[in-house]
Image 1 (spheres, rainbow, N blue to C red):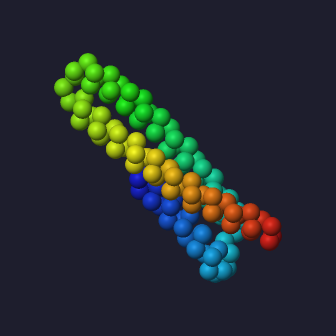
Image 2: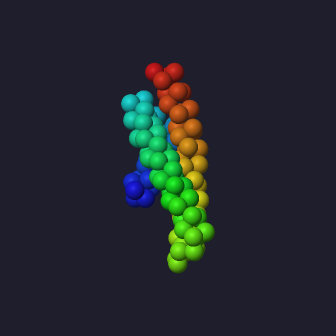
Image 3: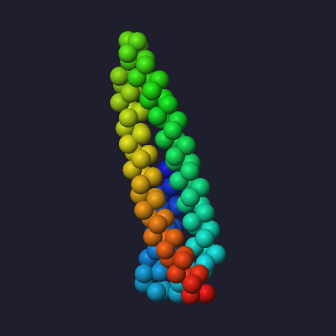
Amino acid sequence: MVCERRSLLHEIAALIDAADAAQGSPSVARLEHTLTSGYAHALALEGERLRLEQRLGEATQALEAGRPGAGDELTELSARVAATDAALRRLRAMLLVLRERARAARAAA
């Protein structure tokens, strides 16, 4: 999933850069396809975050019950939630810019 996310972020950045540099604007179809892929990936990240938060709650209960290793699991899950949130914020910010580029491309067409 990380490799797929990097590829998607790279594609979004390339489309934004192409529109900024006026290097022959990307087609509306390509912009919309990438937006759709980006929003699908954002939904997948949100789902992952929800699963992690559920596991975080379970790990908290395990820690309270005194289960060995629960503290380490809690630390790892907290870090994964934070990383997922950061990835989601970055993706959403890039999608906002790309959406504006798509609007402009549709208006120009």
